[in-house]
Image (tube, helix red, strand yellow):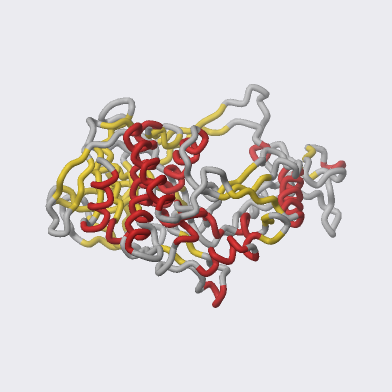
Length: 437
């Protein structure tokens, strides 16, 4: 694919897609461990995400291996690697190197959960001025689909993967851009069993289709767990909160902190845990147990769709700029995919996948017909750099150098205090997040 063909397909076709078959690195049928999510009810055990999906004209049980949100993060990580190797992708960097924080030196608009509109960037300074009050920040605040030039020049990945200035003007009705690129990995044809649901649920029995109340699918696989403590610490020993340090523990009731009735306070790292057992400080044996976790499947499938129709909703000032801007975004999406191919699919512990053959990319025409095209990582980089140069020629202010911000002191201080609490063991267990990306 060359830059002329790219501009043509983006201007008139529906999408670029690929459905890549994957298998466990251990071979077909090897057990893998997709991500787990909390179940329903009180203290629910972890579970995988099950869905009935249509495959080859039949309903089959599928399990989510990598969500759209997770894939977006992985693709952004791949683009950061490309940036480190000299590929010119505009982005914003918050430089924490002078803040003296443990383990934090820089956060980019490709790392931040809400991308260029994230609070980390909002609470940072550009040449001494709050970022969103700067001339660049004000352009981002005012950006709309009718003119998305500010994002293309500052952080084009936000236009690919979606972004929302949720704290913007109008009570969260600020700049909002839907994702143009969808990428997801699922396991197909997964053996399941059924168990009584903790709460009312409706599922379909595999292969029958009858509605059944109060059952939920679980994997047929099991994950064993156990640990032998070489110190032989017994679970009947009680662990108390130290009177000298609230974040420390002691097995001596006389040295324990006391409540209002002069009773020793049991040590706990988890809200609601009042056992005071050595396990709360990671000592002692773990009794053998089995959990319904881990799956086998016929195969996994990575679905990638870059919507040209979505890109055509973005405008940049005139026809020439529209073509160049959309082509740059399409080339960036193609670059992200091929960079991930080169990096591989080691998604998490015991979830390492490899391609089962190499599926071609398909250009989807408006009538649903397709043409195939082959692009590898090297070709995708060359195509992106040509699209980058073409966009600069029509007036886009693009630079390979990042926009560098410095964190405000209040941002540094909240991070420092959080690190101090974490090290003392006094930090909270739960996170409060408003979005999953």
